[in-house]
Image (cartoon, rainbow, N blue to C red; front, side, top):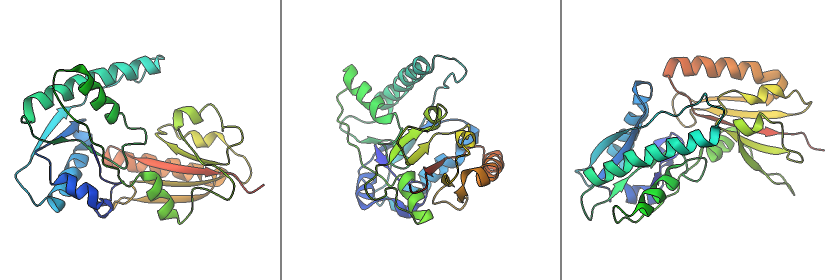
Length: 248
């Protein structure tokens, strides 16, 4: 599993480049027509850095997840199982014995990405002998801080990373610096606390990059409009943000 950065091909590390040049088959999740440009972006990274052809791209149909059921955890576990089934079959069918297959992960595989767990699940099934190696990448969290020219931490304080689903339950008690990922519902709109700032970014490191910073109650509507317009244009969006309370 290779982390390839948040979007800018220049963020691909030297370790990732070395790993790319060892791969025989790249297994690429296929999520339909709306995300074809994400597949193209993966191909562009490989074309730019791989000096040892030939290599192959194999697209693996990514199963849909039930996003309407109230049983969130059960739905995610079912989706993960079906995804592991699809990738296990692709590895067995497409990766030669003794060969190297790879999955390219946006950002860093350590942040809210289920692929490591999926590969561990496949390895634990015993149907094939495989060794899993993870190559870290530049995460959207790092890219966000760099593009806004801020540090994620302040003196004597911690930073917490969470999801939009969890943020919908309220700001965590005692947390002044909160990184939020996977927030399709723009949960930040619920907070009008004086001095609460947001540093938001979408398509970080790409030509479509959008950045907004300011007090939440003043820029929330602007972010919602920009996000909706961008998603309508491209068919997808990847964004993240930092919520920061004022100094006490």
